[in-house]
Image (tube, rainbow, N blue to C red; front, side, top):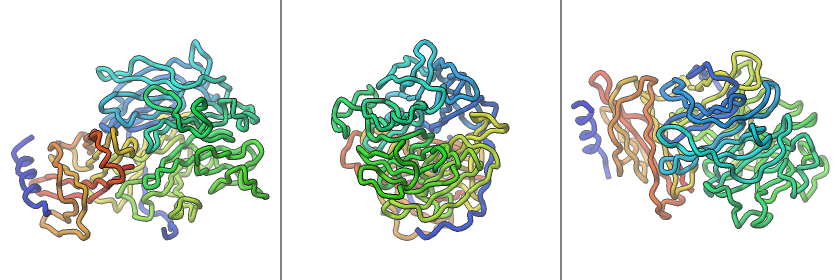
Length: 471
């Protein structure tokens, strides 16, 4: 780093002191980040800021960094056609990726096996090697196969499986289809406290087909967006051992069945929801923080659902951006923005990645996110947005000031307990730093705050503050 950056670091250290209903959503725009991909079905950020994407038909796992596709990271050979729902269909990054390098994908109709399974790869020298099958294998249908993956705040891997076009499988606890599995990572074993005993991967059942699992950043509850048949698409709040009705029920039950769980929201006619995540950043209007976002195939909308404080019902639905073409996924980015998978044509997979920004977002800006919000043995990401090449520094602390302290550089919110290494912003206007949390149980239920400052044309500017709750 150059001398101005050292001066900036010293100055910051010296100045550190001890839902209402969502309205119309103006100000959102979507910008292309990377393109030239082939039928991408899912994506996930690593804590170091790299974006991992899976191409459904090629079986390639690729990495996007600084707005460019850097090449093939890993390969799981699969067999499919453009109009099937087979191939690579989901991806999740291990919460402890910075230490163990594990990446998990859901693969359907793999060459040599013709089944559905979770495959774990490990990064060695910048590439994914040693593909290892985890959990049960199961028959691969033409559609309704294994799908989205996510890590819960308990550090377990959750895996959605479709009904394999045999709707009765969802109600059969002996069938692997139509379920959400819960498994240990990294070995894929069955957790002893699973709801149907230590011999069953099943966490919930009675599902048809889904392309989105999302973890609420405050409660840690997992939500599923499910593609219905002719009746209704659903948003389900998952509870251990819950039966979500398929094929007996679809949508809201006319006569409540005490043995099944109703969705918290439905669409009829169906919209074809694709992808889901909660927004945890601080760059959008405050009403969108902790809202559930999803894309949809039929309308091409990026939609926000505001939940009540208990997370049991949807208070409002807002179209945030109308792509007028198919969406295939949405993730909460480490730069404080949502990232989407879109297409320039009408294909069953994306060919480009876009980022949804808001006109009133602060600049420069900082965000803090987590691959998983488990506190012990996990990773955090600090992301800074500024002019390419600008030097800067960020810091974190376990407290925030109750009111801003105005300075000549901007509002100061976060007293620094840990100053992170100084940096120069990358060519895409982003800088990311991954942090491994220590194996310290006292971090559970704590909130970590972050702020940053950058130097541009001789002027120092403080960013906004952001925070993340650990579980």
